[in-house]
View 1 (cartoon, one colour):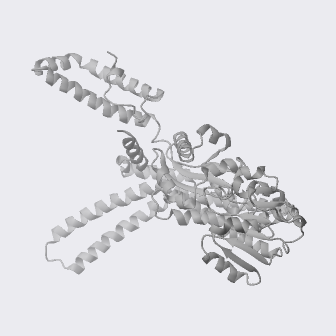
View 2: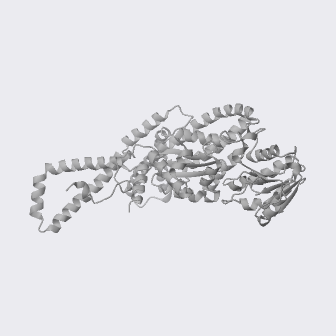
View 3: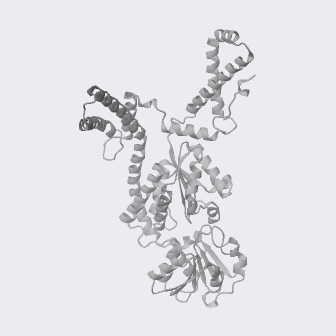
Length: 538
């Protein structure tokens, strides 16, 4: 009987079916095992014949051999798969306004309230170590630290499909994927406003800050991802300070107000009846830009009056009228242009709602405008079929964004120089994390020796020693160890102020590992892989 038919365990990858490299690993192990058995076949068989009083003992021996084989095979395949050589990677994958239309983006959008749960679910995947989610009206991006690039991307794609209901093949048509330095550069460009629909807009930096705020304390939003996003915030602030890229630029909210004015038969909002649905960050900016364009009376529909009252205090020269959500359709009937910016996951306006509304005044064009800057969209796609309305979403803002773009492109070139500098700093910080386990093991090694030698010294001195003398000896031992460790540890740190390359630092790390025999412990990466594999098995 073929040994492959009697192996008492499933695929080491936990996927049920055996992969080619797993079959190869088992084949090699069996060859080695067979050769070893041949070398002592006579003695082994004789031992079994003479020792096995009955079949039960023989079966026990065979079971034990297969148990040993199982353990050896798992370890062999573990090393064969390259896990110990592959360093964890920073990966970003997702969709944005460059790669996917709003009707696709809205299907994969993740509400801010669900970001922590998404992080937990992503980090439960076999090859994902850390994670973060950035989901806005123009993008849905997932950042991960993956133990394996190929497997990590595959698992995240399947997770995205499962949570959104969109097939993997459809997501692949619109997704982008970037690795390590390219992924880091992308986030730095995002936080700087260079990858925004409105070049240089400032709201995205606040959204990146919100990722950090939301991720605090969430398992999986750990050192590398947290450090990446915190550095991105620093880059975003530095770019805006040193290039002035935000000066004179428009935001999504101001572009929405400008777009409506272009489509209306009016030169200002003085005679237009605007309605704003949603008083969050986007809605507040819409109200402010409406006021700046001459609007003196604005109706705001929101769940509660608290936010509307705060906006009213800021804009004392404008009449801001609050209405609850229950009066939304009644307010819409009296409005010429409707701005929607809520976090609702379902459309607020359907075809049957809008169809029943009275027509707007002929003097402003006879068409009611819906400017929907929400993702998912607040206005259902079917509303566009009506002849009495015009519906615009975030993808329609490019007409307004084109203005002022030349000057901001020049400033974007300056921003790229800053991003290049910050990329080097972040890489040095990330690379320094590779030496952290060695630093910890070196300190632990020195501490074991210090504590052991101190105990020997104290035992020789007997019970007559005072607490003060014990404390002095303790301080002396700690001082000697710290002084001796200072030099080696400094040579393990990746610091821009030092003239050492990463390769030199890693060579120092390997040298210390060999000198002090620090490689006897299982590596952190290896432990995590084993834990992940164990979790995936029944």
